[in-house]
Image (cartoon, rainbow, N blue to C red):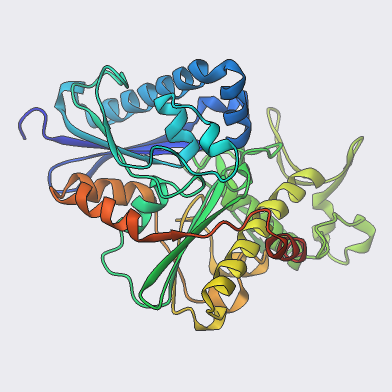
Length: 410
């Protein structure tokens, strides 16, 4: 292949930055992810927008750019390519991240009615976003102040969308879409970073060393570790699986409270440990690491899953669609490739009658960004799709708040 014929796809996540290098036929040559370095100024996007308003806009832009440069460097190294080999690049992110990347005034997103003044797709020239490349970076269009180009990219990745289809990108923001009655309705809820291992005492992103699944065999926890080595932490899917087996094994109750080991009638009780700060679930310990899930970790997961469940229920209600009537459910993001339906149902993150219809798709946002890069009509089609998405604000409404409180229990 000639120089300049490779394609760079980027997913600008609040917690995790991810990227792929593709050839002209769409084959994935390299894929990598790393923590968004902006997290030092706030785990959630609202905190970062407040920091930008208080004078840290330049630093937030620099942190994100430097993280992307590191990510691009890793991808090029994996594929054995040079910066000059990249012939086109595109990225998608939520509105806050896009505004911070472009160093735009954040007031229109941070304050009601949360309507970004700049929603159109743009090409960022090398002088505007220096990633060491010789091509501009296309940024997906935004939908509203809380629904961004990442959801547009995820939906754009779908070859076809049947009637009564539901889509969820589960990350720091739970962005979701419903196609019913020939119309798109979309919304977003603030889930927090727990799905991506953030805000968890032993959490980490889904990479080598992360516990990604937990099962029980003969009263023993069996850990699945990414890369097959020694566990060093827990990613989002591993946390969900841990809580599922803890619920089934009677280690925690439906409110998420870790029980006294004397109340557990099996040998699983040995996984409950006492610390000066309260009871914990101990998954693994060796000379260098002690992997513990504490009560606050469980609470953070409950807050995240409750936001998603409440958002789903409210979106369906606004559209006049019963959860039982939804025919297709597609899930991507933090859990897009590693969580079983049984775990999803046990932790009550979606209406129970939707879970059996779930299909998981890995890196749905990157798939959509890659598809756009491979199609000359991609930018036009993405803009048309974004214009067809009707945003429905839910967070903060009385209906959502009531559903959220109910959704906290497992």
